Image 1 (cartoon, helix red, strand yellow):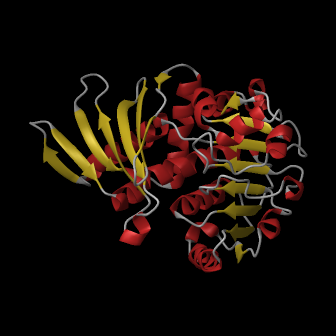
Image 2: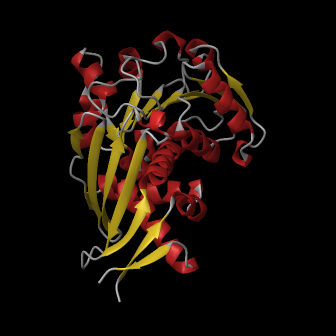
Length: 328
């Protein structure tokens, strides 16, 4: 009898370590850039409480699925997460539903994995000083991903609320993957970014979160938070001087506010951007020297959800994890 396997957030975290998620999205991005995946632009629906999005994707030889995600900013006051989601994975040959995976944890994991992959391909090998903008759930996975691919020695975390950055720093110091790196709650964005070799922005900002003059040569930036044309985290001057890599050119042209606004201001030409999946097969398309600034701009695409969701469900079936629900 067909059944649907349901996985909780805790089960996703237990079944798919970050390093495995990075390898899963590596294959997914390669398929996307090679034309072996179909990913329509996500559907946005604004409501009085927030934004709902639907993200379908198909990856040849891997899977079919759709994520439904909501971003409701007033939820924390109700004791609920800002981001909630579910990922439905289907059999690509029959369309039969195979599993339902808690989507907020999967989103944070697969988004972190994309940052890990980009950092591995673009950051200098010796990069060890990290500036992290944002103190939410996404920021946690972002830091874990960077620590997975680089020997991080120092982390400076910044967000506008002092108590939040102190709490994040306390949490980070307890994580085994930090491997002895020091963690500081930076008093300002300038203190966070000056001298940083890897910068991660994971905020809902509509204005740049650091000054272009504070970013040193040779730095690598992962811009994660802005996912609409109106949002931006990175100054246009940085976009203009950087080697720009995106998760999906089609999606970035429609949604990446950092790049859209920089292009409108004459600081950026879309012909300079290259997809991350192309770097997987040809790293020469990325960093060209130790002094070059590199920028990975992510808006998130459904191939990531499909790749990590399929991996989680396969491992769950192997160990009997999750809850099986009869489907017919």
